Image (spheres, rainbow, N blue to C red):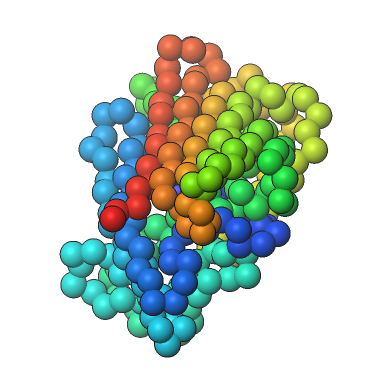
Amino acid sequence: MWFVRGLLAAALVAASPSYFAGPARSGESVTYRVTTTMGAQETPNVSTLVITWTPAAHMFARLAGASGAAVLVNRENDGSLSLAAPNPVGSAAPTIVVLLGQLNFPGHLAGALNGSDHAQTAMSITPPAPTSTSSPAPQTSPAPVVVPLDVNLVRSSTGATLIADGNSKQNGASRSGREGRGGSTGGWRSGGSGRSRSDSAEKTSIVDIAVEAVFDQSGTLEHSTYRETFTSATNSSQTVEHTITIDRVK
């Protein structure tokens, strides 16, 4: 789905795995509930993922309540989780891949800080196709939109809270942040869309991004909310909001 692709397009290179999803130590297990809402009229999609780090130094992920077997996952140097290869092909694997990407996002965004409490970066989002009553419907897809982000980290005795926000209308300002890079999933997009802003700015939706993530003292993700709001460039009353909410289940 374009929303998942847009979210994964924001993945950034973390300097160190200070903030991450999943267990912090061998022998631990962490459960996350991921709720995705795609527009106000759709029923939220809820998935529960259990990530276990066994004493044998292997990490596994499985969907809670699903009949499929757990799949082997790797934790990369930047803290991100991915399916290990080889893995048995099962019906749950594609869903687990998407959920891991969503769980990785807050830690990737924290990696843009490079040890600081503030940074600027950017991510590329593909807006939803506008609704049309014409016949036949337009066949062109919306161009990706680059959204500059201000990223801030607030530390406390119990952990840290990451807050990031941005608006595509800020594109005209000079930004020092890094843009999203391409990836192996095929859905990641680079920050540049290949079209000049002057060609497409008047036709492209205005995109607002808001992110909040809470990590405990060990750096483990406890809660995260990611929200995209798309506003029609020609009618400000037409908006679409998409959210991903992650909660650690204890």
